[in-house]
Length: 89
Image (cartoon, rainbow, N blue to C red; front, top):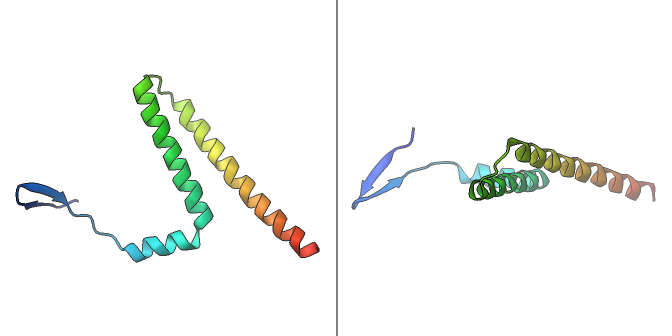
């Protein structure tokens, strides 16, 4: 439930959340946060472009999710292989 406050004729939505929890989650999972925010930006770009062009298809969103997941898996495998290569040297 969102409370609406009247202040001087302008309506303001009050949204409360713990900023420190959000900041700590960004610091601990930086790679995951980067990929999730990039995925969200890609999906929003597809949505806006599809609405403007008029050719919005659900397949585009599925492809974007698959590509984002593939890049995340690639990064995890690359990171582990580099760490393993550094240990064996």
